[in-house]
Structure formats: C-alpha cells, structure tokens
Image (cartoon, rainbow, N blue to C red; front, side, top):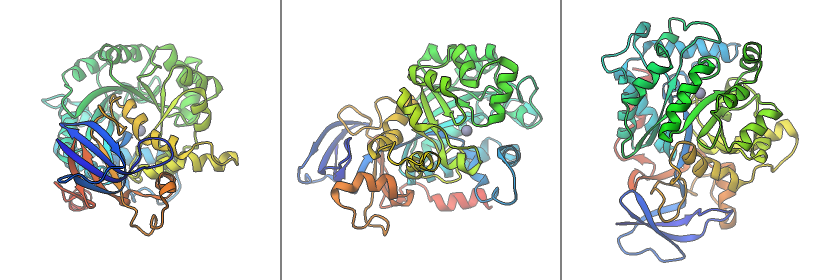
Length: 439
Ligand SMILES: [Zn+2]
C-alpha cells in the first residue's frame, strides 16, 4: 500500500481541495481523503494532481513529421503523401523504437493512457511479417517500456478509397478482407495495462459489409470501436455519392454507433449526424491541434455535447503532444467560429481530457480520483512563469486555459511512479527522440 499526498487534487467540479491523501493498493485507489496532513512515509505530489490524462487518438509514428511538413502550400491530402513516405520506411524494430520515444514524450506530458489507432500492419508490398501482428506487438512493447497504459485500436483498412484498391503504400495497411482482419486481431490478447480494441479506418477504407464484421468482432468482446469520421468534406462527398448517406449515417445504418463507439474528428457533421451521435451515446474524439494543422476545420463541439455525445481528446498527428492545449482548443477554436465565449466550462474540458477519454478507450474505471479507480495520476507544478500566482479557487481554470505539457512534473500509472520532478524514471526521452528522429 502506498499513500500519495497531494498538495492539491482535482476531485471533480471547479475546485481542487488541499492536502488530499490518496491510498493505493496494487494498481487501484483504495481511499481518498481531503484536508489531512501528510502521513509519514507518503509520496508527496506537489502542485495540483489530476487524474491521468487520456490521449484517445494517436498515430505514434506521425511524430516523425513534426516540423517537416510546414513548408509550402497544401492540404490534408498533400500532408498525407508525406505521412505515407514515413510509413514506407518503418519495420517492427524501428516502429518500436519510434513509438517508445513518442510514448515517453506522452508520459512526460501527463498522458497515462493512449489509444493507438494502428493501421501500419504489414511489410513492404503488403506481405505479412512471420508474426502477422509484429507491428502491433511493437506498439505493445513500446507502451510497456514507456509506462503508458495502451488501448491498441487495431484498424481495419481494406480499400485505397471508395471503390478503389490500395496503392503500393496502402498495401502495408490492408488485410485481404474483414474476415482476415478479424482472424489476425483475434490473436492479440489483453494484458494488465493493455486492452485490444477495433477501428474502422474510415468510410473510404472500409465498405459497409466489412464494417458489419468489425462491428460484430468488437461487440463480441465488449471492445471499443473507433473510426475516423468526416474529417474532410471530400470524404462526405464521396460517401454521399456512392452510398447516398453521410459517413455517420452509413456507420449508424451498419449498427456501429453506441456507447462503445468513438467518432474521431466529427468535424464536418450535419444536424442529423449530430443527433445520431448524441442519441446513441457515442463519443466524439476531437483532435484540435491536428485539425488546425491540417486545415481540416472546426467541429461543432458544443452542439455535439448538447446532443448527448461525450467528448474526448487526441493528439492524433503529434503536431504537438499537449492535452491541455487540446482541451482549451475545444473552447477557444469554437469561440472564433461562433463569437460566443464559455460554451465549454473548465470542469467539462478537464473531464473530456480524463474520464471521458478513459471510457472511450475501454477503461471506464480510470480518469477519476476516487476509491476503486485505476491509480493513474498526473501532477502539474504551479511554479512555472505561466502558472505562478494561481489562486486556489482558480487552479482548475488555470490548468485548462494556461498550463502546458512541460508543467507536468509527476506521473503515476497503475500506482507506479514513472515521472518524478519532470524526468522519466526509466527512459532518457529526449535522447531517444533525437536518436530515432535525427540519427
Ligand atoms: Zn487519425
């Protein structure tokens, strides 16, 4: 049994009470008490402790594009060509090394669970590795070494676009059919800090009959099911042209929407889509720093929330890895579109970044500081120039609207300390990133 003593801790709502003792046995919180002096032998967590942050949508290898895709004009589609060039270079060893460094960056940023939307499955030309899950296993190993909890969202990818076969690069993403996808993924197993989930890459890459197979696989296991949805107007147009329905409409008619379903982006959804996503209890995972980077647009976050959809957050393309920036962008980007302030309150945004993301990744008992919850904790220092002078009553608001990833100084995953005073206790993350990105 370990007792963590938090200078302040966010237990929900708009305030963060002082002197919170969190008792942990194994990987679970067993008791939480506010207003008690630090017990002897406790592990002190200074600053404001919040539940660990959930990164609900990640492609770890996109980190190799940071800083290299900002020259010249272009669009999502020209960016995608640069992303494909990175994908062509990776094998299981280099994928593991890159992912370990990136997951290390995430842990340093206070991220304690990541949903890795994994579609780079096969070798050059689409030839399977001797272990057909070698690339997925590389991610599992990388996450374990970096100390982050992982939901491996193994992604079904069959077509290069609606009605077109995969091209030479996309062949590495593609299984021969949905049945072959299900057979391959069924060989992956849950482990103590690893959960296997499913993903439909998009309506571009998976046809309706194949969606049914993926949906049944996920339903049979009670596993999370994610899909990229309406990131681009061109995707909507192609889907309407071929299927007479929006991407959300098509996914709904295939029975995929529901409490285990996560629509990633949901940027260009219409009123009927918003109603479907809300009424079904689906989650929408917004990735604002990627959406702004790729000139995708701003999604209707307030309307989705009002309709009943849950919101989660993802670093997606790793343009930056900073869940505080994602959280405030939900509110701030929408202000620019609507001219209205305050649609999303700080407590809602904090819940999006924690409990909502955990739930979206199949860990409904995480993202909260309460007895029985997973002992995943992130402490944010108030000693930076950004946060110095924060008043106790404003701590939650200041974290959401002014903190950044470098303010995170302690991180606990499953009761184990992985970041102490801003340093990863196992990995030299800066050195690893340098080695894999600029060897
Ligand atoms: Zn994505």
